[in-house]
Length: 432
Image 1 (cartoon, rainbow, N blue to C red):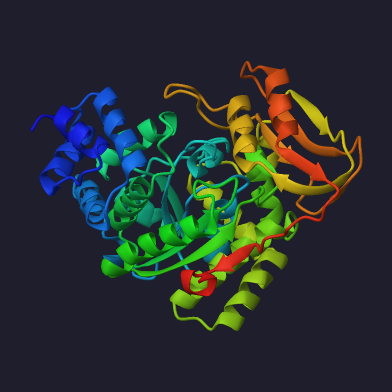
Image 2 (image 1 turned 90 degrees about the vertical axis):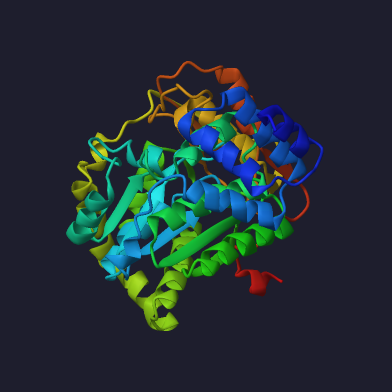
C-alpha cells in the first residue's frame, strides 16, 4: 500500500494497522516522507480521529523510534510534570524549583510553543545563557547540582515527534486527542521518570475546550502512563481565561520569579501549589504537610533560592534585570461598562504569538520582548477607560491595529453576572 492510500484510508474513517502507523512514524523520523504527506495524514487523523488501539500503537511506535533514558533506574524519586497547553500557563517554571526546594527532584523534557500557547523552553531561553540542550548524563548532573532539570527533546528521543510536533503547530492539527496523547506520552515514557503529574487544561484558552473533552484527555493520558508502570495523576484545571497575567516569554519569566518570591498572581500560585501538592502525595507524603511545606518554601525565600540555583545550573543568569523588555507598551482600554463575562483565550494567545511569543512559521525567531499582559479577570466590574490588557511590542514587525483589535475583541463585557468556573476541577473521578 502506498502512503497516499494510507492517507485516503484514514480520510475515509478507517482504522490504520500497526504496519501503516509504523510507516508513518518511520517516515517522519528519518525524513522518508515529505512534509505535505505527513501533514495530510495529520489532518485526516485530526478530523477522523483514532481508536484507543490506534492511539496506543502510535504512542508505542513514536516511543520506540528513538532511545529511552529510563530515568527512574538512576533517579527513582524524580518527578515529571506536563501541561496540555494554555495561556498565561507559567506553572512549569515555578513547579520545578518549588519541588526542588522541598527536596523532590523534578525532571522535565519540555516543549516549545504550540499553536496559540507559549512554550516552556522558549520562556526559559529568554534568560541570558540558559541552556536546554542536555543529554541524559547532563540531566542527571543538573538533578545532582540543583534538584531540577528542564531540557529539550534530543534528536534521539522520539525523533518522529520532533517533526510531527512542528508540523502540527502550523497545520491547525494541535487539538487532536490521539496526536496529543501520542506526542506527550512518547516523550514522557522515553524520559522514564517514575512519577508523573498531568495538568489538563479546559476552556477557551485550551486545546480541549469543554470539560468532557478535557476529562477524556486526562483519562487517556493517565491510562497510558499507569499502563507503563508510572505513578500518575491528572488534574483538570480551568483555562477560560489566562491563568497568570503574562502571555509571552520574558514577561512570563518575570511572573514566575514574583510567585517564587511570595508575590504575584494568586490564581497562578494556587494552581501551581495544587499540582505540586498532588505530586508530593504521589511520592507518599501526607497531603496537609505537603501543602504546608510548599507554602512555606514560597514565603520564606527557599523557592526563590532554588530558582537561582536552577537557572545558574542551566548556564543562565538569574538577574531579572537582564530579561528583554518591550520597546513600547500599548494599553487596551475598555469601551463599555459592566462585568467581564467571557475571555477568548485562544485569540489572546494568537495575539501574543503575533507580537513575538510564538512562531507563525517554522523558521521564525521568538521575540522575547513581545507579549500580552491581561489586567482583569472574569467577574471584574469594568468601566469605560479601564485598562483591560497591555500589548508588549518588541522588535518583530507586526500589524499593530490588527493585534490591538484582536486583543480588545477578546473581552466580553455585559450587564449580567459572570459564571465563574473553579480554578481546579480535580481528577477525572472528582469531575465526573
